[in-house]
Image 1 (cartoon, rainbow, N blue to C red):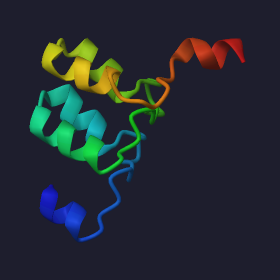
Image 2: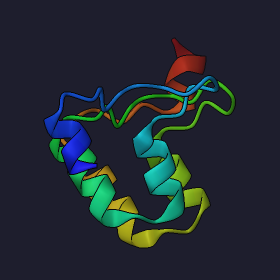
Image 3: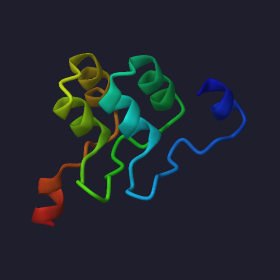
Image 4: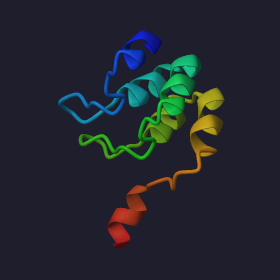
Length: 87
């Protein structure tokens, strides 16, 4: 992943269903990749178009506690489904 990022890969590129590398790494419990993507300014608020989940939701649903804290502690405002319902 580090090689791809150094080569200019878009860390926010989405798959057809809207998930990003950060979604997948969070869901699978790959903390080293999550840390690398966050350091490369991956969008922690990116919503997957199928389920509307952020990478934090993926980590929580997969019960990956070690990933929830790094994702939650980011300075960016966390987007929730409720914020879309209210606005």
